[in-house]
Length: 335
Ligand code: TYM
Image (cartoon, rainbow, N blue to C red):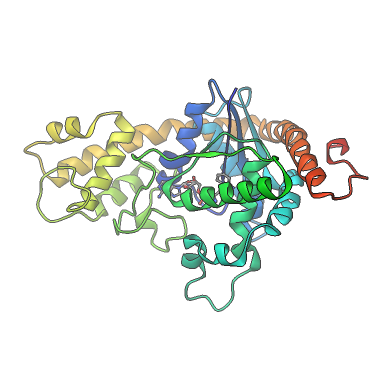
């Protein structure tokens, strides 16, 4: 069975971009693939997180994984900091990565821009991500478009390690379908929808109540003209809203154009709000059910035990290749 790995940071609200670009896709893989989905809390702390809030954010991210349809009987769900091999392999890979290639990571440049001081962890963030992926002999990494460069770096590091020390890591492939892997801000279609955007009108959170969804879609920027037509270059705002509509309904773009032919933006936005509500309300219901069930700690504990078993074998392989001490064998650690 091919193996799938991906992760989401528990660094605040999850939005429609995370949902369509990642979490809902994760669900598509759970039948027929061996899936590992991680809550990457070590990545989240590359920028300050309030220690009083972080546990709830970790829990919420896991609950939304489940609410989106991930079945803990079919997939392994776990929290990154519960599996020490991630930090350990990350250090090893930092010794293979170069300062130059990490300096070229566009996400680092964006996040560091204008800041007087950023953590060293923000700089080495993509190396930890490479460790996450390589520790599971991953075949496929479903991510949004913004993570493509990081997965490419992961492949470069694996290749370099393998050629320097002998065949160790499996080469992962990113899975980034053209459609829906870059949901744009509702306020500026030149930017991606992002949880770090200071304007909450720019994103729809998975926990937004109905009236908030209606308001945010009503306020979403549109382009000149009034036709509902998919022209991403000329009309990026309406193309983004049509993408969201298509993802919620499963309708094709020509079907949507035909359905709204002769109608204006106001009609389209009203229907869009309805279909987003239809998509998110069951997710919100399942979120509450899982939260009330109290099953989460057990699910994450079982996930961590399994993730530790798999990742410790790969870490051991890497340590052997490097000639590092194995007096304490990672596969013999007790969890
Ligand atoms: P994060 O937490 O920023 O985002 C989680 C996932 O959501 C996708 N995404 C989007 N997709 C479409 N449109 C958007 N506007 C949008 N915004 C976010 C992201 O591409 C991502 O797939 N570095 C990763 C987390 C990570 C990871 C990994 C992923 C850590 N280790 C190993 C895969 C494999 C991140 O920051 O995701």
